[in-house]
Image: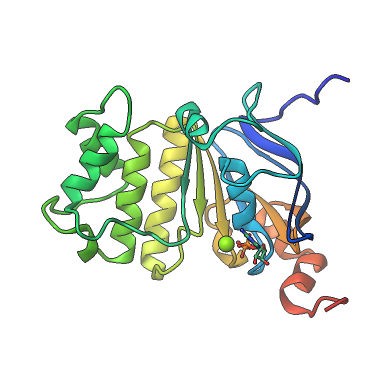
Amino acid sequence: MNSPKNEGIFGCRGIDISFGGRPVLKNIGLSVTNHEVLGLVGPNGAGKTSLFEVLCGRYTAGAGQVWFGDEDITQTSVHDRARKGLARTYQSPVVPSAMRVAEVLRAARFSHKPYLTRFDAEWSCHLAHLHIDWDISAGALDTFDRRKLLLACLLMRKPKVLLLDEPASGLINSEIDELDLIIRRLVDEFAIGAILIEHRLELLSAIADRTVVLDQGKVIATGTPREVFDDPRVYAAYFEEPVDA
Ligand SMILES: Nc1ncnc2c1ncn2[C@@H]1O[C@H](COP(=O)(O)OP(=O)(O)O)[C@@H](O)[C@H]1O
Ligand SMILES: [Mg+2]
């Protein structure tokens, strides 16, 4: 049987994963295209982060396929996926606190082959709106600057797809507006795709072109943020007790 044609630059189909016999993701398919921000939304525990773990290769799915362009990368290692242009951030912006910003950026430069230049680091800080003194200890940065620093470390590698796990978490509204600008510019200027996790549906309307809603490991709605906001299944997932709880 021929494989279905991949729509977009990156995605997955038919992903299942269970932990201790409990299904956490059930037949998940999604894709992102260049210039697109895809919002991945759903209540806590819906399976959003687990899906990112599968997409970046840290978890092995029980079934399904992950693809990048025309290539099946289901069996590809985390590092090889990163080399192909997949970049991922985590819900908690953990930075090496004892290192200065300059040292963190240098470590990121030297983790790439061939080594990246100081110019690459300056360029990626500019794109991430990280306008700080590089002599500061990374541990002294506030949440937003930590997120920007971690993003800058990824941008140096010129990724093609960004997976951002709750990047707005811990930010105040003005910072979220700035974050939206940063992401939108990256996606538009470099023709990349971004999948952005957020559990607050209302935050996606400003940034997401399209939204996939996950609840209890299943996709329950897709559409523009406005469309999914008005979907009764989405309302039920957020505001009503599960029937079998
Ligand atoms: N490594 C793991 N081992 C066992 N259970 C896990 C593991 N990773 C995630 N889960 C479970 O999967 C469910 C979904 O978690 P998660 O993907 O973090 O949800 P979300 O990011 O949507 O809040 C939770 O019940 C969580 O406990
Ligand atoms: Mg999560």
